[in-house]
Amino acid sequence: MFGSGVLDIGIGLMLVYLMAGLVCTATNEAIASVLSWRANNLREGIRNLLDGPDPRQGEWTARFFAHPLIQGLYKRGGGPSYIPSRTFALALTDLIIPHDRRKPQTIEELRLVIDSSPASDRLKQVFRVLIDEAERSTAAGQKLRLEGVLDIDKLDTLFNQLQRHVEIWFNNAMERVAGWYRRRVQACTIAIAVGFSALLNVDSVMITRHLAQDSAVRSVIAAEADRLAHQPLPQGDGSAGVLLERVQDINALGIPLGWPNPDGPPAGFGWLLMKALGILLTAGAASLGAPFWFDVLNRFMGIRAAGRAPEETPLPPKQVPMPAPPGVPQGIPPLSNALGL
Image 1 (cartoon, rainbow, N blue to C red):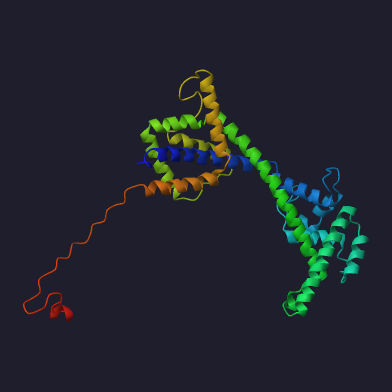
Image 2 (cartoon, rainbow, N blue to C red):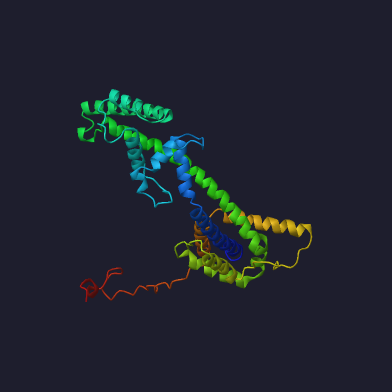
């Protein structure tokens, strides 16, 4: 059957990619934690938001991170990895419109406060745009209230509308910052996957050839894949012991790893080309991440299980009609059956 050979080879490769993906993910998380990538990436994004793209400018970034609302989000000597949009809006508006001043109630008062604030010209321009948006939102809300569509209790004040638009501005900027972080992590993952595959000789071509020739290893791998498919995705903390355990998991399945090459010594340029191709295939697959291969493996295990012949269940004995007693027409049950006797 199709699921007997080819699927088992595919499942074996997916299991290798899953383990390799776990190693890459755990290593990446360890590097990101040691180098504080998340905190630095967030700080860079906020600096770009408050002071502009010039790395020499950072006055308002320093003021922002010195605010008590922000300092409460991280330990001394570090930096926050995440800032809620509400906290960002409260801290920034408090810096631009100090809390010891009366909150402006009209659009004219709000514009005067912004113009006289110590904010940079860049921030003043941003807040003027946000004030205009808050004014339009407030006017629209007042119109809906007069028409009876919106309850007055749900109508925000002008100042609250401004804070809400600051939150939207922050969230939109953080989407770009998250994109920066994902690209950095993806580049690091690819580099880790190439290094891991080359260091341990995790060659997809060699592994495929080995699985095609060894049915016993295919059976062991299929059983292990079936076991993993019924468990949550394995996790790792990036420590050396956990990484070594993942490598040992691959080796324990009977899959050839390491140097010198299990298939024998190098044999010319063609061998070198195939070896590079196999290692790059493994690296590219592992860089997709462990969650991706865990989902694909579960799907393939379902296909493999569906390909097996279902267990036959015994049919009930065939009911043979009995002849009716004398004097009773055919098809009418005896009186004892009708009475439940």
